[in-house]
Amino acid sequence: MIELNEKLTCQVAHLARLELTPLEVKVFTIQLNEIIQYVEKLQDVDVQGVVPLVHPFDGIAFLREDDIKESLLGLDGKPKILQSAQDIFEDSFKVPSIF
Image (tube, rainbow, N blue to C red; front, top):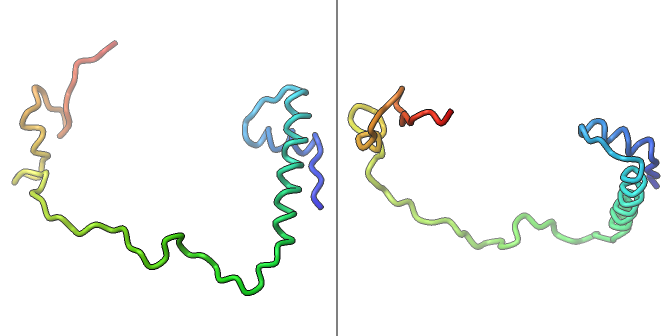
């Protein structure tokens, strides 16, 4: 069984760029140990003969049919929506600065 201690909790917090108070270290160490114990319980489950589940809706395809639509690009290769723009910069909308 893996036993998580406060030193290891601090190391993980450091790697995750988290600053923890001493109280948080104690609380999280307890919580992480409970999570590890639960996962270890799952290791004891007998799954012999159980077929792995690839998808919860096996055999049902929820894909839509392809719907061919008009291109969003003009003959010049630029987005048609830019035709309605007041100002354009490098094939994008140019908007006034807010600063």
